[in-house]
Length: 112
Length: 109
Image 1: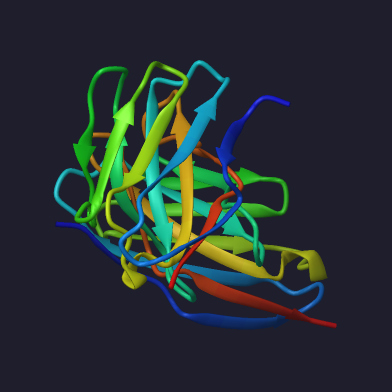
Image 2 (image 1 turned 30 degrees about the horizontal axis):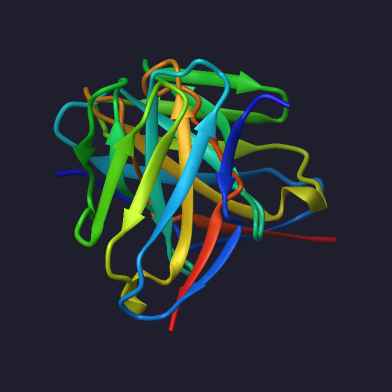
């Protein structure tokens, strides 16, 4: 099925470990986004990529880095995980600006 | 910057109509979107208003007043499966969406 695929679905890290969250879309969308969602909260934008080759900071970029590997793939890296980064991470893409984001199923990350 | 306000919780009975309001402050406004999220699931797109007025999609409608920086989502003929969180989100000129905190809708029999 066409859509946004995130891996892994679940991850437990120890404080200080690093990891990369993967996201790929097969809808030929130009723009891709990484959000985090904490319990009972809305989604907060971490980083986004308006088009292949560009990335920009969102509302909460500290502690994260991103790579837009190609048009399909947009990865999020935690260099040194902290308990405050325990969250659910969603990747999204859109081909029409602000209209109709498609979200992946999320990565549930726990940092202990 | 951008900020949005929406009620944290709304309760309604099956078959009723419910309205979820959203007010926003933003520099550079392109549109207001609504997303639905069931527990443990991904947000899914419901509607988008780029211009003033009402947009209707089946049982769901969304309204925007740009002069009042206000919009709402109207859900009609409520069903149990409509129990979920609903988020409004504003888009600026970069296309990125900034989300509100979400409204938890509980539909009771």
